[in-house]
Each structure stands twice: as structure tokens, then as C-alpha cells.
Amino acid sequence: MKTSPRHRVEPEISEEMEVATMTKTNLKGDWINFFLLLLLYTMQGLPLGIASSISVLLQSKKNVTYKDQALYSISKWPFSLKLLWAPLVDALYVQKFGRRKSWLIPVQYLIGAILIYTASDIDNLLPETGKPDIMMLAYIFFMINFLAATQDIAVDGWALTMLKKNNVGYASTCNASGQTLGSLVGSMVLILFTSEEFCNKYLRSAPDVGGIVSVKNLLYSWGIIFILLTTLIGIFKKEKDNTFEEDDHEKIKVVQNYLLLWDILKLPSIRILAIILITSKIGYAATGNVSILKLIDAGVSKEDISIIDSVMSGVNFILPFIIGKYTSGPKPMSVYLKIVPIRLLLNVGFVMQIYYTPKLLTLDGVNTSIYYYPLLVCLLSIEQILSHTMFVAVLAFFSRISDPRFGCTYMTLLNTLANLGFMWTSTVALGMIDVLTFEECSLDSKNNCSTLELQDMCKAEKGDCIITVNGYYIEMLLCTIIGIIWYIAVRNTLKIFQTKKPSHWMVKLKKTVAGNVGGARILVPAGGSG
Image (cartoon, rainbow, N blue to C red; front, side, top):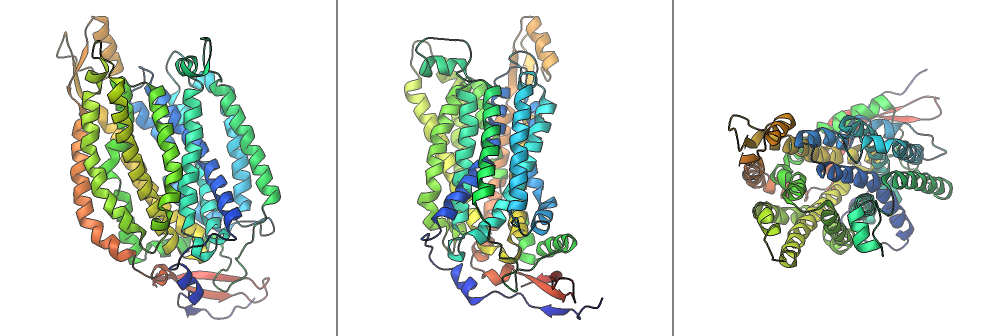
């Protein structure tokens, strides 16, 4: 078999595509696709919400340490590792079934099946009394999040072709709002509707034992719903695959796809952007990952936290639609950069709130909830709104710079870098709390209460473990200082990046035309930036 010689092809982008990505949006004729993307991202957010609620349930148990929380946080790592298998999702598919549906449908079926399996054993994994099986819970939710991350790869790639070119910025709106709604349902329902205290106080006319629904029944229900919705999508949504309709949309083999991934990473601007994304969450690591758990330790109930989180989630669901006209414009990172200093300043607010929480909640004869909880809701709401706005802005930026010829791989690379920046700081922030915290027994200063065994020994002697150095405050100080340095170092670079044309982010390719192998053409990465 003979093939024609390879020749260099400069990255090409049509004038229509170049103009469309920089012009105003108009969802007329795209509303059905918009709502379908919203549904898919909502289904993606559901297991994320369940995983988060498990973390809150664990923290409410006195026999779970921050080291246990750090171990469980590994279950969320698949979203930071999906780059490893993203090229497979982009390159392997059944054309007649659909490039994205080939992965989307089986993956969502598997998520539903694992939720049903988890329901059958949840009473042993998360018992009312006794030590939870942290390792098994981490393993199960790692698998669920692995599948959700795979679904995210497929949906991100599908969004670039499902929506019109000038509407592609709205993919970030669907992503942010859908994930928020799914997380809200997954976390709020699991915590509140299974809580005996909440149900007796708000949902029952007469007190009863347990919540109005069990964790087991919820997981069963969500598993079945997942399977039913996936079936409907598989039957009624026909995917229009653009792979063979345009010269620059050509089928890429798996090996070439990994080479393409490496080629994208070699783009000078991408390498700089990668460093920025991986370090972008350090400034808020303690605020975003430890503060809620510290509030629970300080005396705020998990039910109150869930109610507050539900209110904020409702705001966050609507927020992307409000800010969409700003983040879907040509300079979404301008919005991002304006928010960074405000979020760093909020670190001080969280330190003050958590420091005074035990004192405010234990005042004798004073109803502190009248002013304490509104202040807490205000603080958490501001933090969540700012965080979500930054999230939407970054996703909009990713959508604009991603090369649409292999959008699945490109978008996944960028999202993976952003998720990696969140996950490594999350695990480190949780793990370092116990390391930076020093306690001693009130009866014996030599007993540092550094383990559960030593804490139990101190309590057996009728003593109390007294915190001499609170690691949370040390961690907050370090994060804030690093965050300020990061902002000063990268702001000008991000301003410049968002002014670059789409062609700047495209990969140069070589094209091989195979003789008589079905007329298939294979793109081979050549290196360098466009």
C-alpha cells in the first residue's frame, strides 16, 4: 500500500469561525441543545454532590480525622487525571452511533449501576455507630467520579459542535449551572432528607425515628433515574458528527491523538497557562476545603450547613445566566482578575467567623442565631458567588481558545489542568491541618493528643485535649500570602492571553492521505504553535 508524501499544513481556521468566536451570541435555534447540555451537566453534578455530602457526614462523626478526610478526598481526583484517557474518548467511537454518544451512553449506565450497588452496602460502609469504611468509600466514589469525568470529556467535546460557533461561550453557562444543580440535589437531599433532626423539625407533624428517606433508598432512586434518562437521551437525541464534513475535522487514530495531546502541551502559551492553572487555587485552598469542616467542628450542625449550601446553590444556578453576557464576551479573564483580590480579602472574614463561632454559639440566654446565621450566610454566599463567577469565566476562556478540530482533547487538557490545581491544593490543605495543629492534654502536657488513641487516653483520665496552635489559622495565612504573590505575577499574562486570536492556540499538523484505506485521512501532529 502506498501513501502520498506528507506535507506541512499550517493551522487553518475559516474566516467564519474566526469571526463567530469574537461576535455576539444568539441562542435562537439553539435552545434545545442548550437545555440538553444543561441536563447532561446536571447528571454530571449529581455524583459530585453525593461525594461532597459523604464528606460532610463523615465530619459529623467524632471518630473521623482530617487525615481521613484527606484520604477520602482522593476520590475526587479523576477530574484531575482525565487527561490520561481523554484522547481515547476523542479517537475511539462508533460513527453510526455518534462520536460523543459512543462514550456518553455506556458511561452513564455504569454510573447508575454503581449507585445501585453502593446502595446495597451503604449501611456497612457508613454505619450509624462505629468507624466508617473510609478506604472503601474512597474507592467507590473514585470509580463513580472516574466515570463522571469520562462523561465530562464527552460532553465538553460535544458542546463545541452541538452549539453554534457564536454560542459556544454558553457551554460554560450550562456547565456551571448544570453542575451546581446536580450537586445541590445530590448533597442537599442526602443530608437533609435523611436527617432525623431536620425532618422532625421541618417536615413532620409528629416526631419519628430517622429521616423521611434513607441513604440506601436515595442511592437506589438516583441509580434508576440515571439509567432511565440515559435511555431517553440515547433514543431521542441524534448526534450530528462534524468529523467528516470539514477538511479540518478528520478522524485521528489513538496514537496520533496522544501525539496531538503532547503537541498541544508544547505550545509556549499552553505551558505558561498550565503553570498558572495548577497554582491558581493555592490562595483559597484553606477557605474552600477546610472552612466548612471547621464550622462543623465549631458547633454549626451539618443540617444548617446543608440548608445554607442549598440557598447558595440556588443563587449559583441562576448566576451564570446573569453573568453570561460578560463571561461569554471576548475577554472573560478580565472578570476573573477583578475577583481574585476580593476572594483573598475574604480569607480574613473566614478566619474571624470561625474564630468567634464557638463563643457566639455558646452564649447563655442569648439567641445568637438572629445575627450569627445571617452573617454566616452572607459570608458564604459572597465566597460562592465569586468562586462561581471565576469558574464560569475560566470555562468561557477555555471554550474560546480550544481548537475545534479536536475540541474534546483540547478542552479536557485545559479542564484537567484547572481541576488539578483544585485537587492537589484540596488534599494538601486537608492533610496539613493535623500537621500544623498542636494539642496537649489538660492533665499531662506530654500527651500531645496527636492521634485518636491519645485523645481517648486523655479523655479516659478525665482530661481535655486543648489546642495550643490551630493549624487552620496558620494555613490561612500561608495561603493568603502565596495568593497575593500569584496574582501579582500572572495578571498581565492573563490579560494578554485573552486578546490572542483563536489561530494562536491552534496546533500545526501534517496531513497523511491514505491510498485506498476507505479514503480515511489521518492528521499527524508536527509541533510548534500557530
